[in-house]
Image (tube, rainbow over all chains, first blue to last red; front, side):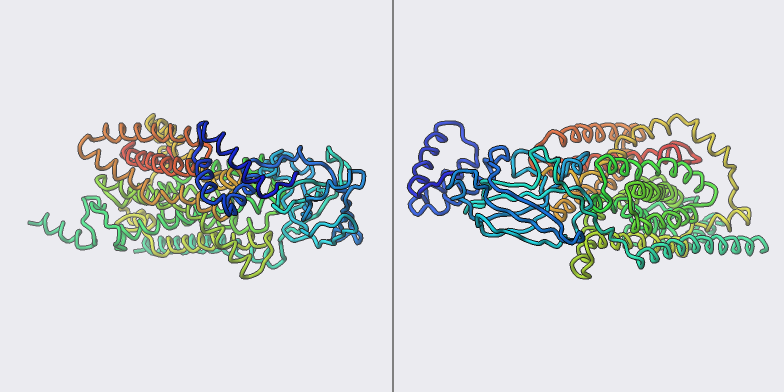
Length: 234
Length: 389
């Protein structure tokens, strides 16, 4: 990503407005034009809107990001912890990471766990992408010596995963990434076994209540038969 | 003189005005009078609880699908299973009502399907999930006993209203559950502190207990006919005991039943399908959270509060002027409009438009169901509902 100076943003806004106002405008663009015109002098709102739009409206695509981070993941004790390490890939030219402000590390579904599950689908537009649904950690960016040990949360489902780290700029827009697997997401995947959520007490309660229902039905039938016999005798 | 005295003696037994068969000729919604209005309230509440149980899973599917590792195919199959079990159960239920009376038939079915709901809490695989949804779905056959009971208690003039209201308010459960289950789940998850994968399991006890209690209420507080229960009436000779094969034969050879079965499949069947998928549809397509998806989904089913009864009332109103022809034509028009709106729902792409179309669609499809049951009581004088449902 590139850095815009304040005046450059304002300038590009006016250029944008000029183009848009001469073409057919959608209502949302009109709203943006009105607000920006009012505030361009102290153009805070316009700037924020622009950054919102940059992330939300225009949508950063995954294919536009470079793999500038090296990420590794391991489970030292093999139980419920995951250690993630990440660092800037020095083979990229210096200054590539000048916009990086935050690193957001996420747990992502491997293709194997996405089969027939459209709610985990990978989509190029990062706003619609559902590959990475579990946040591991978010930390300020440093080029090296980053490590985090995460205790796997109870709501993580049983699946095959990999770890991906997104580098975000000051506008919280993705500008780079790294993952512990390859581009086709087949190497270095790991499985997480989930909790079942069942408890012995639940099992017992379930069965007891079920038996109670059936038994009470039998009692009802017996009571009804007796009533019938009483009437017949009468 | 003697005749009028006899009529007075019989009328005094009942809180509502009755006809010669002791069926109520008026429908008073806010009364709980035995036996007519009490039967109404017992039947719609128990039917409501069955709907709540059958559709308890859909609003919690985003959690359940992660816990049980369900695929989209598994979810689809479970949804189909939930509503298909009821097809055969309803046929059997019609016969059971004819033979044992709606009170015993419905309380039996509810108590036999309650275990399926309790055992949902311990489901651990896609196969188990499908099984519990399948058996829970059998409880939707209480619809038959509801309609049968209303037709035993209310005269032709008001049977459309009674059927529409009891059916509609029962179907309401499909909407209410989309609100109830996420609420119960979040209460358990945040206040009791259970993990997500335990909280949904505990949540299932609520509809299960509700269902069981409603069966108890029917057994102890209800009665089959205005004059009493089948068992007592049969033994004392006041009610003729029907023969199963005769009854069934007459039911399946009546062509009207089959035609109504087809049209009903395309209004009620559509309603059930939407109940199954709507929460997930909004959750996945428009990225709303579980709560919001539940609220939107609920509004579909909650329209049943007035739309299905509205269909029933409309049927009665039209019948006063145009008779059976009016009932049939109105049914056709309303169902056609519902069909077009269903097509439209699939086409719209924005959240607001989807919600608006869904709401209008829900009114029409549910009214069509209500209108169908304005016609059903007249299919046969001896009145067997089995094939239609």
